[in-house]
Image 1: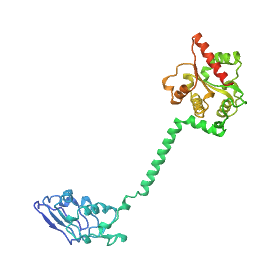
Image 2: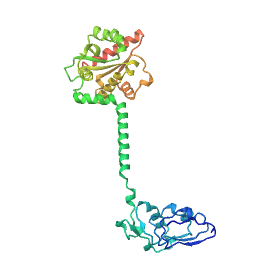
Image 3: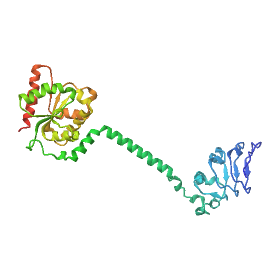
Length: 322
């Protein structure tokens, strides 16, 4: 049975509805009883009681007595709210605590309501667990993509370097198997300066042997591995820095190689040539460290400045021979 809406009794202060086989309650049935101070619903057929079973004012008003004893409570998670309310308002229940017991399910039958353990109600169900796992995997994938995109050249370098044991190469100047005096990392758009200036002064005037990827690396192999090998067999690793170089993906990769060479204690192998002022968007953290830590020469159109530039380059190559 359900309780019908009670009307035309605005001054009613006490109501006894016990022993009526009432199965469910709805707050609307009592909404017009503003003066109610006592309500008895004991010994009915109520299996569940929720916040919506009675008007909120009855639950919250401290001087209202509510008797729900001797009902066959179904002690499942939906009863948790009432259990908590009962524990906090036992002085208002107007019934013996031993009369508030569980009837179902079997494992809780005749167990006092206060002993009903609701801990399992807060365990994550399998769908929530699955959703959390999927969300975690997606976050991990997204984070991995971000890390790989940001450090892809460092990762690629370490893979190839570890594979070919480049990180454990003997220190510069302790080896006698160098094939080149310097490996030159540059952008192909700066080829004209490389051939007309660098090759002319370093190779033809001073007889040093440079390794240029366009000229000296034989096509057909794995390019990344060939470059790493050429760097390893060169006394110096020379980076010709320009905006063209820093704008190019391969240039950023070679900058990453230089950064790792510095980190592994190979700073003496490195030398930087600045063809022009590098735009701010290309000044990465690793490039800042290189410029601060490694010797470099700045190209200029001034004739006297060029003499200083070439002296700097040649002296740096001479240091590697000592």
